[in-house]
Length: 140
Image 1 (cartoon, one colour):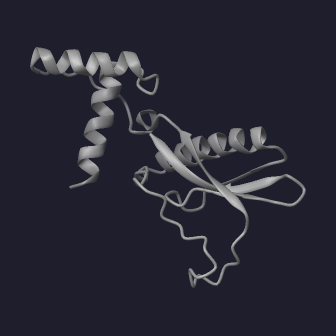
Image 2 (spheres, one colour):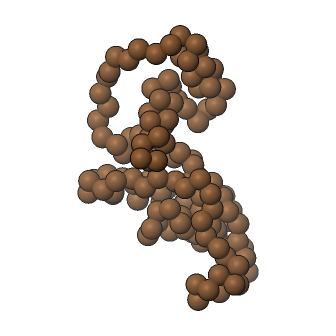
Image 3 (cartoon, rainbow, N blue to C red):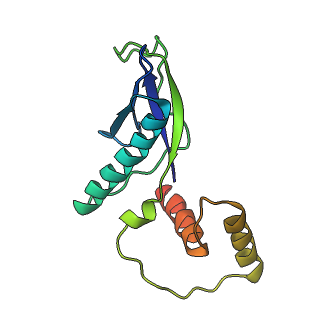
């Protein structure tokens, strides 16, 4: 799943940021590479702690939901920054996997397999189906 993060860039080139969809998850780095690496590590650690405490892993929103314009009336001063996406496999935080047997139309299975083969985001057919189910369930 892709999570959007806002990265504020300081005058010395270092940066810090946060995930609007994941309250309390912050990260920082001295270089752009370190910042992105720390963003991924921060999200992993945050979700691991949430899973250990039995908390639900937040869904990623489909759009950037933070207005950084000076007119946003948040009382916060707008800082120069950039939006980034951090990809993380959230299925490992959902608990133990169970094997199930399902029936699907052959052409649908072929389309799923083709999508999995063309997109490295999905590690398997099961991963694709789990992500599709999570997305659908988040809209209920």
